[in-house]
Length: 182
Image 1 (cartoon, rainbow, N blue to C red):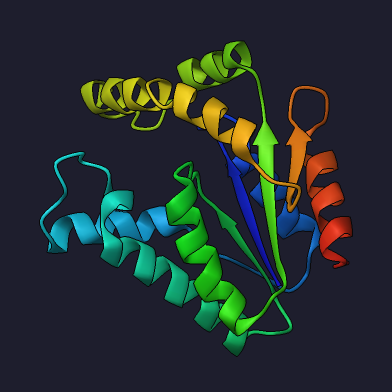
Image 2 (tube, rainbow, N blue to C red; image 1 turned 90 degrees about the vertical axis):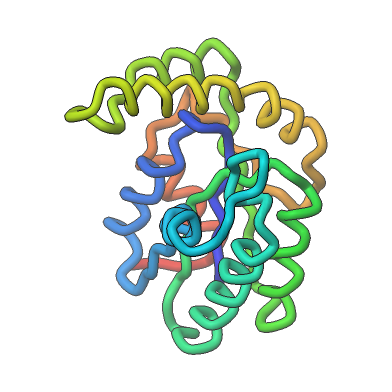
């Protein structure tokens, strides 16, 4: 089964994923952002500067997820990645569902104030303050798109508020919904 953990930057995807690795014995964590970083070095970037706008990124992510599900059926595949473009998300999920219909889309929900506090407190590149500030500004600039995306989510998405539950509790809820145990 694949669990895609989605939500705005600062919603808690990494923290919840870390907790899942502690409570689920057979787990693979795939970070599509790494694929995006590699593609930045290999192919021309779109004008937006966002690797998600590359059709090859979406294909690499979708095919990788499908391959993990196919080759490791006894593992839970966890994919922590913000994807707020509905068409991109469908494109990826459709490929995965061709391989296995066991896909759980989780949205970690947080309000603007909480997201802003969390993003502002994050240090991504401690040795490069300019790059760190650029990443923080980029993430802050994506809050509106994430909040709008949350309003469009369908009933097939498990929405979990992150303001009242710990990452551990959220991970436990996801594991229960995915019907996996240690």
